[in-house]
Length: 101
Image 1 (tube, helix red, strand yellow):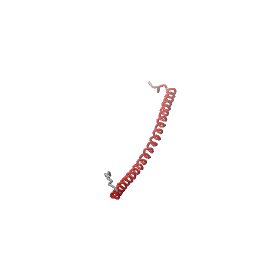
Image 2 (cartoon, rainbow, N blue to C red):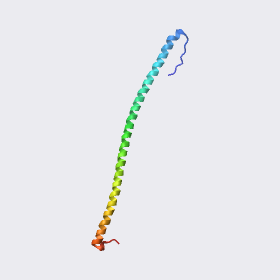
Image 3 (spheres, one colour):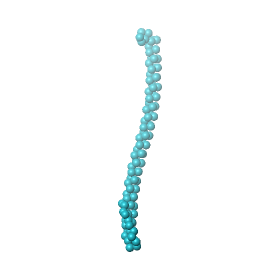
Image 4 (cartoon, rainbow, N blue to C red):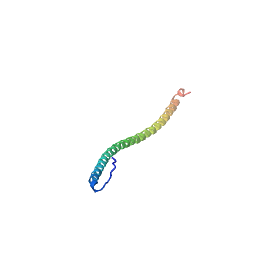
């Protein structure tokens, strides 16, 4: 709220002070409302940031678990391949007619 204030001497001093006080009060009220809105917005931002952090932590945990499962899968595939070769080798020794090819 912008007002053009004019000071005309001692007779208008009361009116000047009254108008000035009204302007100051309006500015303080506006500031209080904006500070309240800012506080609410900051609280909402904190809630969102907390949720984002939880999601990041969950993602990191899941990624680590996936990597561990991928490593285990590779190890088990290697063991399965070795087991198949071992079983096929025994089968050939027991019955040469079972040899591939």
